[in-house]
Image (tube, rainbow, N blue to C red; front, side, top):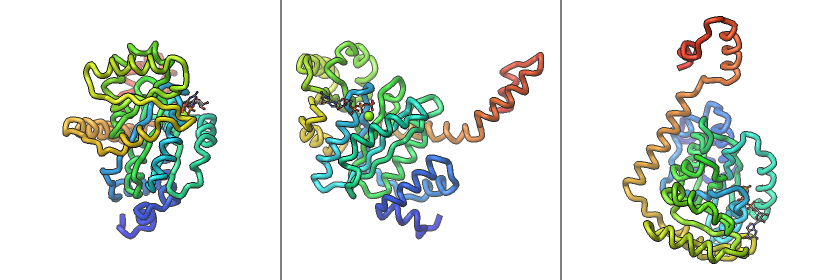
Length: 295
Ligand SMILES: Nc1nc2c(ncn2[C@@H]2O[C@H](COP(=O)(O)OP(=O)(O)OP(=O)(O)O)[C@@H](O)[C@H]2O)c(=O)[nH]1
Ligand SMILES: [Mg+2]
């Protein structure tokens, strides 16, 4: 791709329309997508913050509050709301839009929802590619919101420089869960809805738990009242010290996803369905022989 390509230039100049078009190309596998990704200058210094946690924990409200705070400091921010649970998320999309509406017309805020999911559920290769496009478009910070269900929490950790796990006082029952998986992926915990009963007890228990092994900060916020946000943002803006081990883990995760994505190209579910229906007519159908021609 020519370095003077208007779309490329537009992205590099931080033009939201150009960025939106490029993202749509990537989202739908439209030809300039791969060429674009091979040519853009991805700024690896733009911090990517993953915001994950159970449904309804207040992630979008928190993202909104963080955005307001960061924009106040004169910075440019991009928000990617990823719903890995369903390819049809118009409902939540709309909900997110309404909650984010305060930021919608801000020229320093770019918002995009993605309904893409990976082959195995969770974060898709496309999400990785789209984050890289955004990283080429002159932002100071990228926030990626994803609902924490199953694998997606672990996967966001492979995408983000800092992963923030949002919990609520009622998450007390999930403390075992936190012990088993979340500890490895979280760079910080947020106890949101700290206006609710049991918030202090829960936050203290969580602190005790995480401080046994790690130095992971625990923040308390009331996102819809913008409480505790300044402190959280101060931490978010601190440069991430990513050690080499984590850096190679992140790259390996990304490379794996991208390879997986391209290896699956041509595996069309509709064709699979039709071929299978045809193959099943044979009395000696064998799924291993059948899939041979697909592998
Ligand atoms: N009491 C209280 N309610 C809050 C707080 N933060 C968010 N909420 C409310 O919690 C509800 C869910 O908030 P969202 O921001 O949509 O939560 P979410 O985690 O993005 O939800 P999903 O994206 O659907 O998983 C909304 O009604 C918010 O107004 C808080 O700090 N305290
Ligand atoms: Mg949300």
